[in-house]
Image: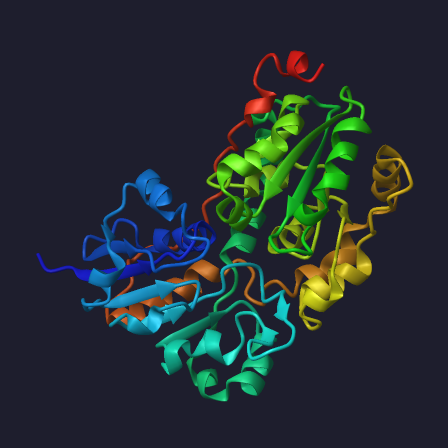
Length: 387
């Protein structure tokens, strides 16, 4: 039986996790064969282990560039002009939040000409999450505009579909009814929360009463890849010994975010997705120079309260809990996607149109997230470890 071949181009673990939601739309279609490849990338060292956990068919990059495919998917631009296939390019995070300042690479990351025209080549389609991005495309790379499709955001839809399971996620994590979960979130880069963790982490493990609070740490996979898992775990070893849950880069962070009572974040995608969960957000850092001023991250930076270095952390959490109003964040949430709940429908239609095939005769349902894996520090006996 002849099958059409779909290539998933995985530069980093972050890109790979993004594409898995999309590839699930091709499940159970015996007309298709999905294979994976990994171009060289500075943060790609963990990708082979990612493939190993998937059990996927993997082509060496140089071999993949010598073959022809019926469709290719990529959440990053590096090297994809070498792929012989109709290519769909997609963002790898929430919206387009970061900008590069100065030099030839200046612009909004993901919406620059070099991002949209890798190697000077037009893709078959460019997927964007919101109609507002079309204005930026018209300005920065007008020849791509006819190829742009407003498809929505898969993570937004998975989180939204999973919100009713919050209590189940908290039970899976072993959280008691009165226990508050504080999730500290960091993107990557010099101005991320991680860059200030030497000041923040002692507060998380030293100021919050252990009978009322539990803490978890979500660090961008690029931090793990850039510094190495050994080094990151070494830096965080004392925190884990004191009971902080360190979420590994391969874990699905979305259900842990839903389980949170407070999110302590920065200007990255995970913090922005936290606006969907209905809990207070405090910003540990929010560097204006790195934020796309027209993005929802810029709106969040002007609205969310900023962590104070001088006031007790528990008092700040009590304060933001009293002051938080979910409806105040509605304009920010609405900028994540202009197609809420419709990503699967839109993306599947686009993929099958480029494949030249009829879609499967069933609704592409948004499946709720699985229960989170309990961090090692929260295993039985954690109280002894943190004593």
